[in-house]
Image (cartoon, rainbow, N blue to C red):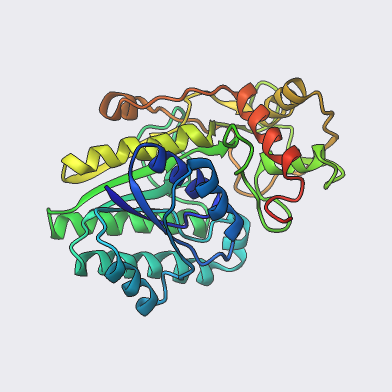
Length: 337
C-alpha cells in the first residue's frame, strides 16, 4: 500500500514509518517540522535502506496539501500530526483547538476529494473519563480534563460522524497509553524541544548530564509507592500496532477503536528504578507537589487489539529503559549535531 504519514518526522511517526517500510509499504511523509527535525527523516531512510518522498507542509496549508495528494496515489493515511503538550494546551487552548481540529478536518476533506477513505488516527488514553476504574476498556465512559485530550475526543467524534455519513470509510482509532523506548539501533528516538513534558526523556537527560535532577510530581497517590501509576509501552510495539490497524482497515469498512498498552501499571519510581538497573546510571530526583489533574492509576485493557488485530506487546519495562538510554547516550543532544 502507499501510505501518507502525517507528522512522520515525530517520535511515534518516525518509528511507525520504519515499521511500514520494513513491512513492504510505500510511504510519503508530511511534517511541518514545528516539533521535529529533518534529521529524523534522513535516519528513517538510513535504517530502512529505502527512499521516500518528504514534504515540509503544514496540514493547514490547503494548496501545499493538495499538491501532496496530486503527486501521489495514496491508499490510506496514518495521521499523527498535531500539537501534543498537555500543559501548553491548558494555557493556550485556542491554539490547540484550531490547529489539531482544523488541520484534521482539512486533511479529511482532501482525502474525500481524492477518494482516499482509509485512515488510522493517533488518539490517546486522555479521552477516558477520570471516573473510570482501570484497566480501561474501549467502551468505557469518555471525558477529558484538558484541551489536548478534548481535541483527540472531538476528532474521534468527527471520524464517527464521517462514517455515519459515508459508509465507504474505513477508520481505525488508536488510543495510546504512555510510549517510551526507541528503535534498537539507537538512531531514532524521542527528542523533545526544550524541557521535556514526559517522564522518560527527562530521566535520560538527567542520566546524560543535561538536567540536574528529576522532579517526581506527588508521592501521596493511592499506589504501591505513592507515585502515579501509568501504562508504559515501547514505541516499537506501538508502531507495530499501526501496521496491524492498517491491515484491519484494508479489508474492512467501519470505525474500529483500540487501546494500545501493555495492561501493566508501573509507577514513576518503578520506571526510575528499572532505568537505574538497566543502565547503571544513578538518577537524582526530588519529590514535588502534584500536578493538577493527574490521577492515581491509569492502565489499559488491550484485549480487543489482541482478539481483533492479533497485536500484543513484546517489550518489558527493563528493555524500554535500555532502549531509551541507548538512544540518548548515542545522541546526547538529540538530532542536533
